[in-house]
Image (cartoon, rainbow, N blue to C red; front, side, top):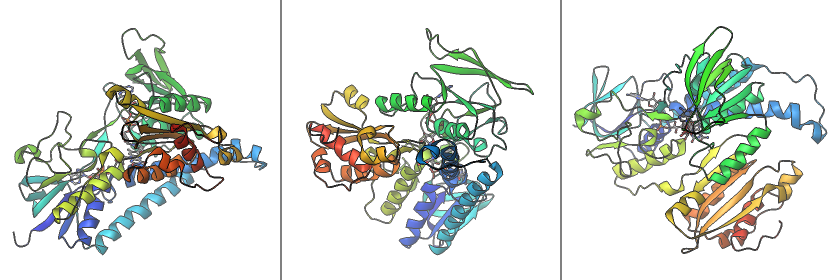
Amino acid sequence: MADAFDVVIIGGGPGGYNAAIRAGQLGLKTAIIESRAALGGTCLNVGCIPSKALLHASDLYEAAQTRFKSLGIEVSGVSLDLPQMMRQKDEAVDGLTKGVAFLMKKNKVEVVNGRARIAAPGKVDVAGAVLEARNIIIATGSEPTPLPGVEIDEERIVSSTGALALKQVPKRLAVIGGGVIGLELGSVWRRLGAEVTVVEFLDRILPGMDSEISSGFLRILKKQGMRFELGAKVVAAEKASSAIKLALEPAAKGGSKTASALDVDAVLVAIGRRPVTADLGLEAVGVKTDQRGFVETDQGKTNVDGIWAIGDCTHGPMLAHKAEEEGIAVIQRIAGLWGHVNHALVPSVVYTTPEVASVGATEDELKAAGRAYKAGKFPFMANSRARTNHETDGFVKVIEDEATKRIVGVHMIGVGVGEMIGEMCVAMEFAASAEDIARTCHAHPTLSEAMREAAKGVDGWVMQA
Ligand code: FAD
Ligand code: NAI
């Protein structure tokens, strides 16, 4: 294998391209194979980036219509130029995907366009051309989970991909799934004028998040005008020229409050994502997957020597920064350096207004595990900066393990909390106690003072509430 690559990466998303950059920096001979026209994966092309571009623009549009007036800013004639809003989104995507292509060149990574298949250990086939590899990294990501009975056409019944490119604002939009995609993209279209109804299987939104965050956030979204059918499932969608008729049933026996039908103009199916691992040749080389197709790994290592897997196609949260962490850690290990991902400290942010941010254990998890903990809470209503900005929805909750005196979870709703969570990630990596945060001077007036106050609350010495 004299001419073999040290690393061949299948998939050019945040997992794959960050692995490639690190590999290039470490002098490894590297190739990255991507079947899409542009690098960047789901995140840059049809995920994080376009959704954040629309969230930002639609938030300003709503602010100009509703929030400016009370700040003494009179604007008139505010109107939506949807094609321009979509163009600025596409420009952000285009600029960033080109940036990734540039970084491949800069780090001497060979980019191969096409669909890859593992032909044998150490051999990756792309349309008949075989790349020899000492290490193969599977970074093939994920795709929307389909919903039987509700066929996606990406025009009127859309996945997140179609919801990022609707040509007009639907009068009535049904969102199936009250998870991150449903609430972010549902918020975009509500702000732009759609009547949005979220149909969620469970009796709560954002499953997996701290339940107090879920219920607090539900109240806020309802106040903003989003409607919810909780504990409900969509069993069929019938398309007519005038409307799409959704048939709903209670998700569980005995559930009764659910509407039985919903007439809408567009439907977003956002019930989760599934790994892209079929037709990759995994069975032939013996790489283990679970029943749902996720590649089984231990810190990136599969059960087959020389084959690694990272990001959405493996277990854990489907997040770009988790994929990136794993990509870099695997390359470090391939290069004989130290590489490890602390999966307990992967933050999660919902980029609505206000935002939701979370890291570490929830109260629900600690209760279920029977672990003794103390929680401190502080509302943004009592934070001077939030009050000054008239953005007082939400709160911060800091949870400390009673035995170790370490912060084990932070959960927040509030404007700007997506940026604030980073401070707590650093603190938790350094094994901070709530008292460490409570004794750290924070600038005044800032939103992050609410985090300090919540930390003080763990030991009962909140100053400002
Ligand atoms: P992907 O980004 O999915 O990349 C995998 C790539 O592999 C794809 O480009 C695919 O074309 C390619 N591929 C697959 N099979 C092959 C093959 N056989 N040969 C060649 N190429 C192949 N995460 C966040 O952290 N923050 C957010 O704000 C956020 N927002 C999101 C919004 C939306 C609407 C969606 C859908 C997702 C969002 N995510 C967000 C999730 C994030 O996009 C994913 O977690 C992330 O992209 C996973 O990275 P990855 O590298 O594992 O896979
Ligand atoms: P999700 O797992 O977050 O939410 C799916 C929701 O659909 C759940 O609440 C689930 O209970 C519900 N559901 C499942 N089947 C249903 C059915 N038949 N009827 C009604 N409801 C049903 O998945 P989502 O929102 O599709 O997002 C996929 C992934 O993308 C997430 O795991 C997330 O990590 C990632 N993402 C991250 C973002 C961020 O970090 N800001 C933004 C968008 C996506």
